[in-house]
Amino acid sequence: MRNRKATPYVLVLPAWIWLALFFVVPIGGMLSLSLTTGNVVSGFQQTFEVGNYVTAVSTYWEQILRSLFYGACATLVCIVVGYPMAYWIAFKAGPHKSTYLLLILLPFFVSFVLRTISWRFLLADNGVVLGPLKSIGLVPADLQLLNSAPAVILGLAYNFLPFMVLPIYAVLERMDSRLVEAAHDLYAGRFQAFVRVVLPVSLPGVFAGVLMTFIPTSADYVNASVLGGAHNTMIGNIIQSQYLVNNNYPIAASITFVLMGLLLVGIFSYARALGTERVMEVHT
Amino acid sequence: MSVHLDTAAPSAPPPPPARVGGSGRSPRPRRRIDWGRYYTWLVLAWLFTPILFMVAFSFNDPAGKHNITWQGFTLKWYANAFAHPTLNEAMFNSVSIALLTMVIAGAIGSLLGLALGRFSFRGKQLTNLVMFSAISAPEVVLGAALLSTFLMMNVTTGYWTTVVAHVMFCVSFVAITVRARVITLDPALEEAARDLGAGSFTTFRLVTLPMLFPAIMAGGLLAFALSIDDYIITTFVSGEVTTFPLWVWGSTRVGIPPQVNVMGTLLFGVGLIMAVVNIVMAHRRR
Image (tube, rainbow over all chains, first blue to last red; front, top):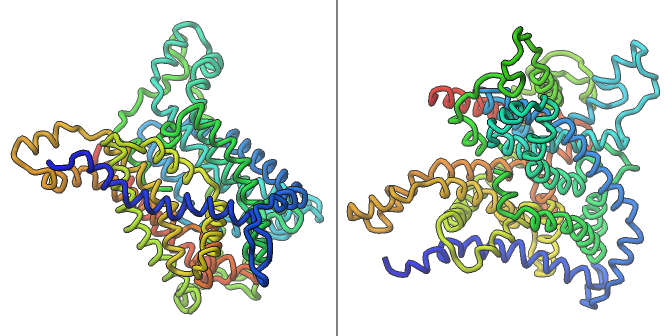
């Protein structure tokens, strides 16, 4: 057993190199790109000018706020819809727990983009949902669901619901059911037992779920482009088009950095409060 | 997101029914309607709604380009499922990138997971922090950051930059899956192997690796699933190369070709079969 001490370093080295080269360095690269001036034709100069950030925020504050708002709404929908489901599966589904979990994950075998596009057709003005309702006169003929803010929030909540259900389920499933019995023995009713015992125990799972839904939903642009039309664009749409359509890299990099900065505050205050390992455990 | 969950539940003993509700003090036990069950099925119905639409419309015979009203039943899109040259190419790219990602991220991530679960070493906290950031950073940031670097280094984006990006975001997921398994392993088994005269490599090959294998497979399959479904990061780093999600996106700008629904239905079928196998296996184990 030579070099026992070297073993862990040999094991982690490939991953360290990969993550350093293709994650840590690129984040630094983006920071440096956000501090350049110039354009694709004349080339970019590293000027360390923060003007890009001022331009980015003053031009796109509306999309930034809208993204955070849509993300928050979708996260709230996920909690409201997902919590009772996680609760029921953890406590009442008995031997069928794993079957229900698989059912929740099964839609994920169909591509994210394809599922989102299917909603576009479902919500279309004369689509499968509105068409029949309109023809029998249940809803006004000019009602539109597609290309509206609720459609985007619906799509976001739809796509990220499992990321809320799974962490809450993971915490509730591990909870000692004797705690609830003890609460009942102390004359707590069902509601009291839930509010005073189950809910506090499940809060770390809710936090993990919030982290895992709020971040991807507020940075998503697929739902906004597919379901939101021209008036509900999010910050992701701006990043995508500035990088890939307008080639305005300095501005694109600075908006991305602003977005990441806003989300990082949440990520790291969470990591400080509960620890990174905890989040990742809940996540698996 | 599918694979590692089956480890969470199957061995748990079925809890005594309905303990959380009444505590048996009431003299006349009423039969309570299990609203939670109906509610759960309602949410599941919501989750499956667009998929049912997709499956139904893979049998539709659309009149024009807009495949959103039911015109008639046909099987011709199944007969022609692979008759669309650019779609085939995209599907081939997706599958081959996902396989490469599964192998590379599976290997690198498993080693990382083993180290994190078994050893303490300098930089462990930093490694955790980097993994955590890579998992929680939004995809659009990861894609934009990589593209920024490729632009500054004058790297032409394409097939291989996509592979590199997919491996990057999958490594951490594989590592946490494997680490979870490593933590539960009994070190006595490896000590026993050593007592029986096995060297450290032999012990690893004959004892540790077989015990880790399910987790490594789960991590690899997770990487495969994440890679084949990724749209956001891929748009940034794929250059001229098209994958299945990118092709779907591009083609639906002009109206949804029926073959897309067929491919989606086939993918869903594969998932369904895997899920059923998983459920049956879990029942056998019990």
